[in-house]
Image (cartoon, rainbow, N blue to C red; front, side):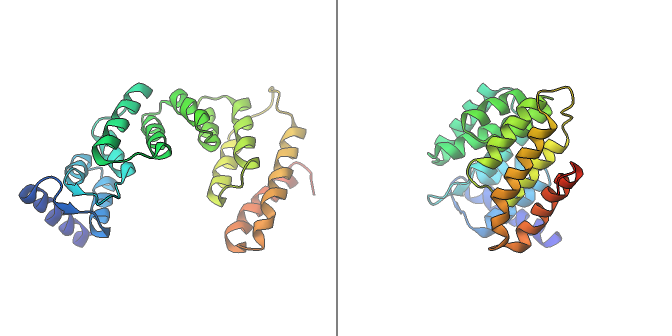
Length: 220
C-alpha cells in the first residue's frame, strides 16, 4: 500500500508540473486512480483524471465515480446533465455506457425511484429488481427478477444478486403465490444448470443454492 501511495504521489506531482492532457492512460494510471477512489480521495482522483490523454480509450466509469464523490447527484436530471457533459469532455459516445453511469450516480445517492426509471428504460432488470427492493415493492421485485433471469442468459454473479434480492422479500399478502415462486425457481434451475457442463466451478454453488431453496419449498 505504501508503494502504491508513493506512486500516486509521483503521478500527482506530474499533474501539477505537466498539466492537462499530458499523462498517458495506461495500467499505472488506472491503478493510481483506483487507489485514490477506494481511499475516497475523490478530489485527487478527479485532478489526476483531468490530466489524462485518453488516447481514444476514455474511462467514463472512473471519471463519474470521482465526479459524484466530489459532488453527489441530487436528481435524475442532475445525473444526466453531468454524465453527458463528462462524456463530451472525454470523448465517450456509447449510449449504454452513458446510461449505466447515469444510473450509477443515482444509485450512489440512493435515488431509487430514478434508478428504477432508467433501469427499466434500458432493460437492466437486475438493477430494477434491486431498486424495487429498496422501494419495498415486492411484486415489482419478483416481476423484474423473472425478466432478469429468464430472458437472455446472464452471469453467475448476477443470478446470485437477483436471487439474494428475492430472498429479502416477504411475499405473503401479495399476489405472488408460493406456486409462482416455485415455478420461477424451477425455470431458473432448468435454464442455468446446463452451464455446469462448461464451467462447473462457477455454476455449481449457484445451482446448489437454487436447488436448496426449492427443497425448502418441499420440491425434490
